[in-house]
Structure formats: C-alpha cells, structure tokens
Amino acid sequence: MTVLMEAANAFFPPLVMEYRYSGGMILNFLNFNEGRFEFINSPYLNQFNLEELKIRLGLMEDHPFAKRAVQSGKKAVMLRVLLNIYLDSCEDFSLEEQEAITFCFMYIDKLIKERTGGSFFVPNNFQVQFIKLNSGGRKLDWGYLFTINETIVLPDNYLDEFLATHRNFLQNARANGSPNFDMLGTHLTNFYHEVVHLLQRTPKSSGVYTKMFEHVYRKLWGFVKIDRHQLLGLSEGANFITNPDGFNYQWIVSLNGRGYFLPALTYDRRRRVPVGVLIELESLPDDRYRLTDRWDLIERFPAYTRRFYGLSGQLYHPNEIMAQLLSDYLIGNRIYADHPNYVDFYKYINRYMR
Image (cartoon, rainbow, N blue to C red; front, side, top):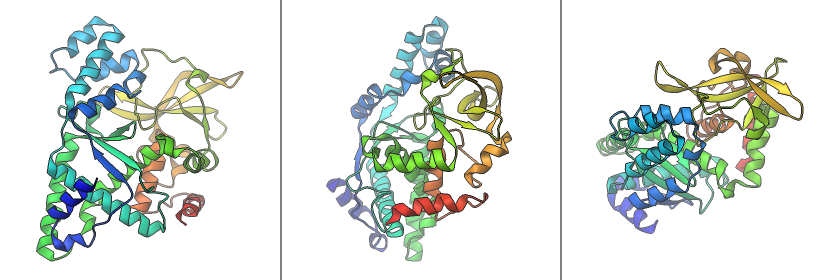
C-alpha cells in the first residue's frame, strides 16, 4: 500500500494533491496468478446450474472449447471449461490503472469520512483486492463489475472507460487550476457500490454490519430470509443467472396479500442479457415454497418497486438495492424520496454516522 501511495503522490499534479488522503482501506492489486487463485477458491462458479453454464458458454462462441463443452451435455465438462476461461482471462494491472484506482479510493475514503464523521462506512484497515479480467468483448459476465471473496473484479472494458474519464479529469484539472470531481462521479459511485458488497460478504461484516443490513431488508423492506432447501421446483434447466453479489434463492417478499414472490435474475434470450423478475411462489407446510410458472419483469410490479423510494435499477436482490442506495447517498449525496417511508430509511442509516 505504501508503494502505491508513493506512486500515486508522484503521479498526480500538485493542484490535485490537496485531495490526497491516507485512508483506512488497504488496497491490493492482484497479479495474473493471484487472480486465478481467487477464482479457484470462490464459490461463484459452483452456483451455476446446467442451463446457466450453457448460456454463458454460448456467449463464448469464439473460444475453441466452449461449443464442444456445451455439446457434451456434461455439467462437469462445461464447468471446467468455463473456469479455465476465467483463469486465462485474468490480467496484470498497468501502473496507470493502479494509480488511478488508488486515487479514487483514497478520495472515496476521505469524502465518506468527512460526510459521515466516522469510519463505519469505510472501515480502517479494510482489505480491498482487485482483479483485472479480460471480458472478451463483454462476454464474461456481460462486462459488469462484481465481487468474489474480498475482491472487486474489474473487466477490461470498464477499465478502458474509467481511464478515459480519469485522463479527462486530470486534463481538466490542469487546465482550470482545480479538480472537478463530478467528472468522476459515476465511477466513484460504482466503486463504492462494490465496497458495500464486500461489507455485506466478508467476516468483517458480522455483527454490527449484518444488523444494519438485515434490519433494513426485513423491517423496512419486508424481505424474508430463506435457505435454498426451502425452495422446491428448482432444476438444472432453470433459466437463472448467478450474481455473486447477491445469490438467487436468499430472500423472498410478500406483495399486498398476493403471497410470496422470489426476486431473481434470469436470462433474456432475445436481448442476451440478464433481467430481474419476480416469480410467484406457492406456500407449503414447514416454511417451504414451490416455484410456479407465474412470473413477470420486476418493473411491472409497482407494489414492489415503489418500496425502494424511486430507485429504478438492480431491484432483484436486497444486496444490490442497498449498495446502490448507499453509494448514491454517501458519494452522490442523493436522496430517493418517492415513497412516504423514505425518511425511515435515511434516518436509520444516519444513526451509523456518528
């Protein structure tokens, strides 16, 4: 971390250095082999059912073994080939990428601690690792950012966009004599969104973090936590897509006396992208539920979507909803107010700012 800080200090012009901050997060940029190790030791790919493996490998039509693996029809073969694609797609970060990311995370640390008056939302000594992944033209995970273990995975297509924005930010700062951090706003929000996912997952999130997240999920939003074995009707042919930041089959929700629904991520074959849906459940004895064939896109359930104060995206899992609301609030200073109960959410979050 010290070496990276020194490199960042040397890289940025004096007019930006007043925003340098020796923050509490510990950043570690994994190399090719270290990135491979993280994927091997992550439960992510093991969540994929047979149909999801076919979908993901089907996007890799240029890979020499992807089509052959799908044709085999064997889950073990497909999983092995897909894992090898992930392993081969890990790359080393360039110095410019490390310096630019380090600068943004140090600014995030400074900004949030100033706004909240403490380190709860950016814990001191919090470990954040990074993997650079060649997404093959947005074919691996559709080019999205995601997390595994204690690590943020940054696809190359995203890094290219980020570096272009960061270079413009530096040029603008030099030309005008002061930095305009609004130019980095979307990336700062995206980065902190992923930090929230790390807080939701790692052992550090036990205790007070779990209490905060689950109070919001259960008490303010009405989610009910379940285990996968409580759901009947799951099959290897189900059209689900796994998001490691919030696995399917973890939470269900009741809608206006219509019974329980499962929010989930599924695959839109026409657009070839994941989409969020609500699937109606049949309640069974012993706290079990059966999936039905009655479902629709999340945005067609206003009784569900309005619970989240006007947030319009990533509503298929409470982890995603929380990460977006928090990052918009703490980084962008944005409050969503399209629901009478929005005050309860922000008042509760503000309790952790002291």
